[in-house]
Length: 121
Image (cartoon, rainbow, N blue to C red):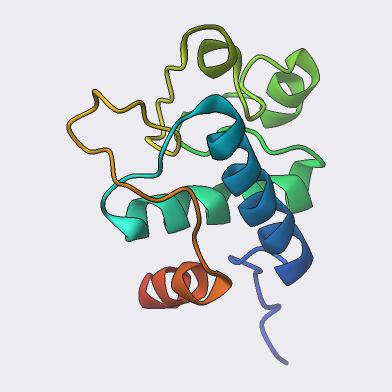
């Protein structure tokens, strides 16, 4: 008898969709990714995983008692209300130029994301 495999990773389709969204949103809002690319990669992976599991890119950097209820409320679906209203990204995915951790990139490759994901286990 084999143990069922738990999918801890997002699908490539969702990962690519979230990568593309993140790049376009950063460019549209004049924000940048974190100077440490692994932070960006982990957040995009989390968004993609939630998109697969919940049907929406719920913020992966918060704790929720009921993820489905949170998706339906839409407040923390990326881009979340604080990001849309004040350019405040709790996940450090979209950073303004005055942030101590801001990088100079608005793009990230699938290879970089997958390397970070694979290094996490």
